[in-house]
Length: 95
Image (cartoon, rainbow, N blue to C red; front, side):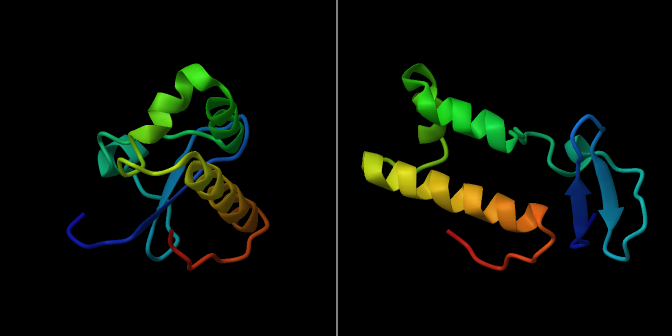
């Protein structure tokens, strides 16, 4: 893979597809590219964020010491980012 770019996309009810930097379908799978990644959909993230027993999962992705308000801000930012991507608009921001 050595510095190449890939796009991973999945539509509801379908398997994920991987395309190379030229837009051609690749033989790689998401696990090939990112072997230890955990992928969650927007609804899964929403459910996790609202279940207090699963909030500890979110803390794995946040730096220690962040306040509850920052978790909500992070969640809202990521949801807005996902909506922009779903609409086909490019998103070049970072959090």
